[in-house]
Image (cartoon, rainbow, N blue to C red; front, side):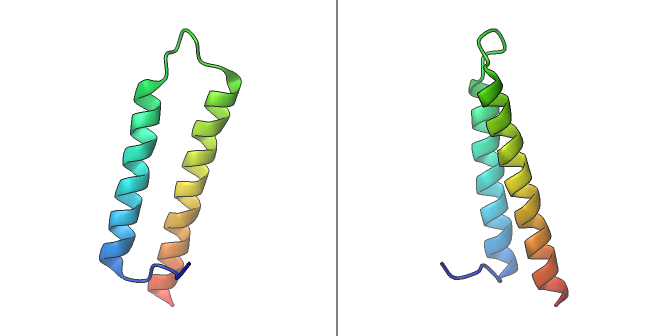
Length: 61
């Protein structure tokens, strides 16, 4: 997979990933949430943060 280096593509990618995260978060029922669900959300946030840092590193290079 080719790295995303264009700023517009980077922003679009991050928006899409954030939208997915928000949809998953919205679908979670606090009454029935399992630890695995929380771990999945944390992993999604970590992945998003890592991608943002990656994009920032490319724009500064």
